[in-house]
Length: 256
Image 1 (cartoon, rainbow, N blue to C red):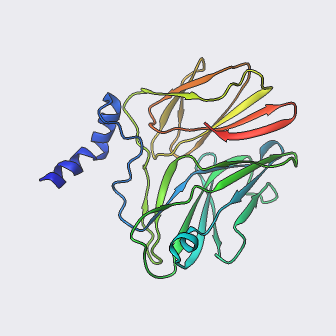
Image 2: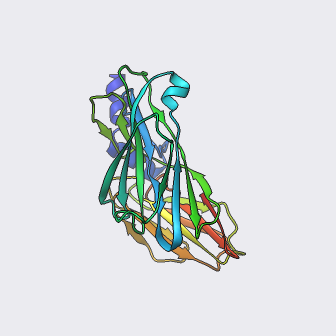
Image 3: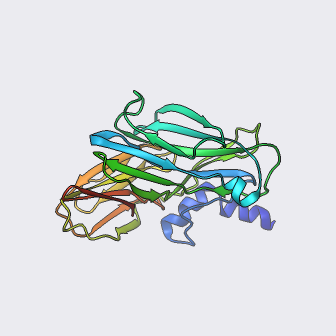
């Protein structure tokens, strides 16, 4: 009986109601994941306006579990969540990847996710590799930021292709209030990139801007200036934009 009550209490519809009415809110729910899943963020890539993106990751199966990694799988999407390509990387190869506009599929911006497969065996738990992504504009030094929101999980088991999504939860109304902990008043301008982490539309209302809807798993970009503090509202319970700050030709990238 207790297990049945727990299952109902943590069902998608009840979680949405709890987040709407503030009853033991749960912004990220991983309870539906069985063991041996590799959880990825949706990492922003951009090649617009002179940008190059660098992705750095590590073999945590080797370093922390002494397990052999079969391969890494990186899935690329554009800003509208249109699938672009899979990149399969051998664990013995470099753990650094450059994304630029020399390849025709990488135009403008989008996101990617990274997963890993075990070479036989299991670890009886779930993993998340937050990784680091660097952004360079016009050949300047890279500004690095780590992943900031669980998005999708894939089975670590070699011959299983099970996926789990909607790890971040939503509410029925835009009752989730956010404040970016940065003072923007002395900047030339700044950009916010929001990546929708769920398979449904989410709403976004930035301070004095009009409310917008962000399509499932897609990227929304906005350029702003003449702000000091920035707040926003959404029905998404864990929404952290990537922030690009510009001043006197210099760039600083971080998450909110």
